[in-house]
Length: 190
Image 1 (tube, rainbow, N blue to C red):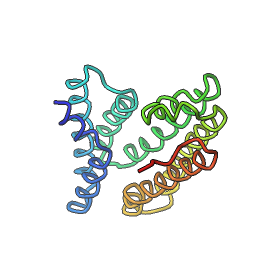
Image 2: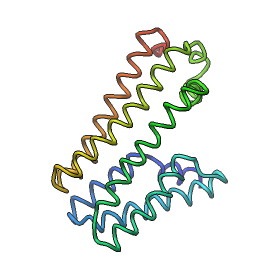
Image 3: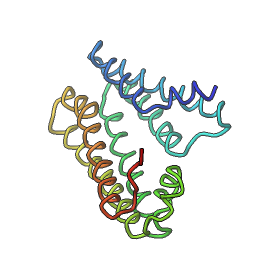
Image 4: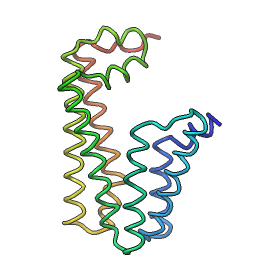
């Protein structure tokens, strides 16, 4: 069950399902059904495999279901399009506010998965990266609004598939490069 949960919770799976559904159908409502179904499967499998659902997945699912249902019922994609901005703003604010009050606890948890060498990272570097990631997510939420209101639905879907993927890659690369420049992450030896 854990392997199945890990497979379904791979972020690339949702991206691939999104791209394939749009590429085959060009129908936003089929796309909505696929996203709702896949994320619901993710929630169920995570609950069965780990006895709990991670907060980011659960928050995203809680926003997706009502906005997806409204999108389908009213036959208007705007509701599901807005979900993307809301989730990005929410997660960005969580990063910035948690960093402000409790320090870079989320980044500490993430870096602790890398091993003991990550314990030597300075708090100021981790705080800078946390703020950068938080404000970046907020920025992407606003870019999404631009695509919703000033571009076609096709352009919005392409932005969601390719633009966000590239933006996230650039953000992660910049964050890693910053930590490496500060001498915070050791390059793998081998």
